Length: 98
Image (cartoon, rainbow, N blue to C red; front, side):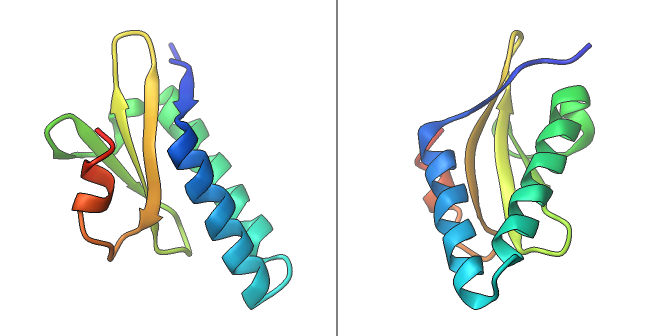
């Protein structure tokens, strides 16, 4: 059974900003990043417990070949993506979104 994945507006902004930054580095790199995000979100949708809890009820899923991490919370009826940020950022950056 899958749960709907809701990407909060702040996480959508994270995706847009990172996409644009990667496109400036090399055309097409932003699209590869977006593709990896879609892959991880699909895995989370069907197996939300696949990735471990790192703080309170927040799970973290690292993107393959990128340094970004998807931070999300599983509820009974949905999954909410809080942030998609570089893994080296201070934890308070995404914790403030809980």
